[in-house]
Image (cartoon, rainbow, N blue to C red; front, top):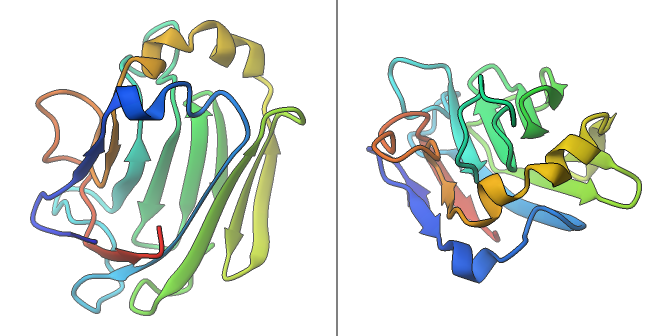
Length: 168
């Protein structure tokens, strides 16, 4: 899968169902599509969206409710279910020029997010807003998930990736 030049993929809500409310694991291999250290495909930003599933603005009561993973040119990885309950892993990836194994885990029973890079756990976070996340789950369970773009209608040309992805 190549996500360049404002391209993205969409997974329909009907296929996803309540994905994001229970345990999940997302793993893939990724690298910059142009061989550089730049993973962002948006010239105005230094990050891109791997996935986003949501339907509320970040300043709303539900705080960008829904699973999201953002990848930064500087190697930072952000994994969140809500904007006010985010796992940020600085320097998680040394270079986007080479294939990198990423794995993202939600352990719902433990209320825990984890990020693995090349098989090594690089960060974890206890979710302190879990009950609020569940209470507002209808804000995203009826929404599709975008790979390589912002979730908002009319904004599919923002937060794009410059990436080749395999083994998703």
